Length: 392
Image: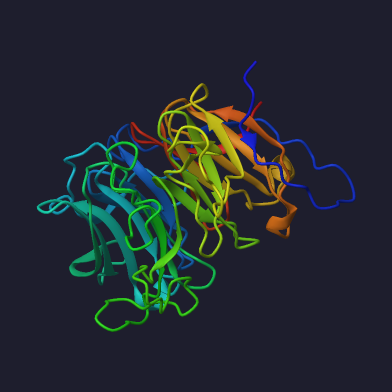
């Protein structure tokens, strides 16, 4: 019998009784009337517009963003943004990888994207605005905020999410290849292998964005990048904020043995490439992991090969899904397994170590998403968007 990931032991906070067991889940097509291939071969993101319109966007790795009403009976979508003329797909992990709507999108029409570009190879963070057509972005409005040189074509990161503090958080991989040959993960003078935090409503000096004054390296005289919020990451692939507690949950893709979930703290060092999960990587034994923060959960490559971070379920409190409340849902790209990790309702201090496989998707899980109500969706290669439901 398969066992679940091994969580880092965390003492649960006192409760009035045992937490309910995490129920088994299944997935069902969320938009069954859309034809096969409506979202191309490689959808990588599902998100919603924060303007009360109940519209959602699906991003394709090849460069398109589709927009449509969040309605199971929908029969067609519109192309919201087409970046296919500037997105590089030279590497398997390159492409259009991230999109985040400004919290004030309803009034300013701004959104932000993360994509791979070539000649030279780099990751690009840009701002766009919507056009006069609410279902179409103004392609001429692009303002490049940041370009990150990429030494290799993999480990591109690409997650971007606005935090409850209004700042934009962006995940960046370690520069790629294998084993972090540039030793970027432990080098805070580079943006590779980090989560950065920037203020898109202001500028700082020659930068096209602002540096929040409480960033851990803001004002440092030693060359650390002031954008960095956390480092020591290999390839943070999908992260999200718990909409109730504000905690930042990250899935970090491992090398050859271990996949991990991290709870991100200000200035935290998450160990790569000293550690892979909770295990020594370089050197393979006897490593000095002092000063690093261990993952809250990990699983070995007997259960999968590439983690996809998800969401803490805070969706509609209907009886059928009540026992999913406060469960962090995540999965594996290769095996399709889906895990649930129960967290405390009010504080990350209440994290409990109950962690288990709760379902399996019939496809390669590239992302998880939320709609405005907090329902959780599974994005799979092959163009599938499924909604999470309880198993029958």
